[in-house]
Every structure is written in structure tokens, then in C-alpha cells.
Length: 309
Image (tube, rainbow, N blue to C red; front, side):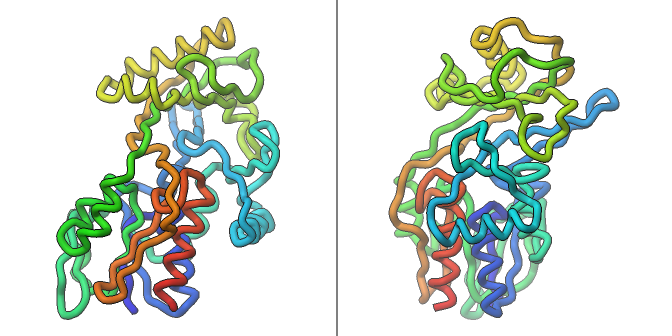
């Protein structure tokens, strides 16, 4: 089949990769500038210096055999490494968190900067509507975006799937990215300190530039909800103040920015993946499985198996 996959995060790219292995012709579309989803890495050029921040997922674990096998393959390829400073069994992408995602995307046909807004039935298949959408007709469509974005895409043609998506609630997360002039006198990781849910010395992760003192500071869900509609600059300043209260005096700041993950962490779900063989519409993502990176992988894998089967 000619399959369109909407979303170039872990779930979408896993599903697309497995479908290609099964002999299908797959095209992936994503509204972003590059792959990653919530496994993103931000690269910043500022005053002649380059700073990098893993501003989404901080690490991942591998519990299920299928994902453990995939992680070991990535380790062999040099694109993931253990990071015990986070916890036992923690892994990160190298040299950035998005390294495994980039590797998958490079092996596929992925079109970025494409915002898909709707599906139109056409000759027993589907055509995509939206900014940058192709004129192609697809035999099947896979929707691999957060539940809140999946619901409107599914509402007209797969209302039951759309209802499943609307029932899911995701927690937001404000994230500050800060580069300091010199080292911060603190452990490499910090958790559950006031408004801060997690903070990490990004430059201490394997494969990073250790000469750059770069930190990612993530607020907890409750604090993030309370600041949901505020300006990023003001939120970033407040998070930095909370960080200073937690660790003490801070060195001069070279660069700072804040980003809101509006749909950062979904609740636990046992559906795994959704597939309507009559409509040829499938849905995958962590919101159908659970809030971890591994859940997104397993959801994409489950959908690919259902489609192929």
C-alpha cells in the first residue's frame, strides 16, 4: 500500500520503518522543522557560541524485549548511550536526544514543514489537506500525533477514534534552557524541588560538549498548568529563580529561553494502537500506551503489525 504517516516522532517513525520493511510505500509528514517530537534537541547559535539542549524527554528506559533489542541496535550504531546519573537503566541519544529519531527519519521519505489539517476520501483511499500537503492519493493513513491534535483529524471519518483521543488528558510542561558562563555548583540532576519537576546539566550527558555549561529546567505539571498562557520570557525568568533557590548562587547567564510543551505527558492507556481495516485509518502514539518513550515505540510497532497482518 501507499501509506501516509502524519507525525515524525517515535511512534510515527517506528510504524513507518516497520511498514517499509514489510514492503509498503510510506511517506511521512510533520509540521516541525525536523524529527523528534518530544525527543527534540534544540541547537542555538548565540554570540558566536553554539549551545545544545535536550528540552523534551530527558532520558528513556527499556523494559520490553522488543524495545531492548532496538536500543541495543542503536547502541551498536553509536546513537544511544547509558546515562546512570539519571537512574539505573536510563539511556539517552548521542550526541543529542533526537539521534535515534534522526537515524530513522534519514532512512525514510519525510517531508517537514507540512501541517496536515484534514483527510479527504478519494477513490477508495485518502488525500491529505493542509499547508504543503501533497497531491498524492494514499491507500491508508496513520495518525501519530498527540491526542489533542489527533482528535480533529479523526472527527469526521473515524468519530469513535476521535472520541478516544478526546478522552485523553495530557499534562503541560514549561521548560527553560539556560547556558551559564561557568559551572553550576550542583549535582548533574535535580528532581522535585518546589516548582521544578526535573533539572539536568545537559552538558554532562554522554556525547555532549562538556565545555558548555548547559542546563534544562522543567517545571512540574501543576506549576506549568498555572502558567499556561504566560509569555515564555517571563516564565523562563521565574524558573531560573526557582532553580537558584534550589541550588544557591548561579554564574552569569550567557543564554536563556523557555518552551512550553502543551501536551508533554499523557496518562496511562492500554489500547496500544487503533486500526480500522475498512477505512484504512490507523492511530498510534504514547497516548494509546503510556507516557514513556518506550510506550511510543511499542504503539508504533503494534500498529505496523496490525496493518501488515
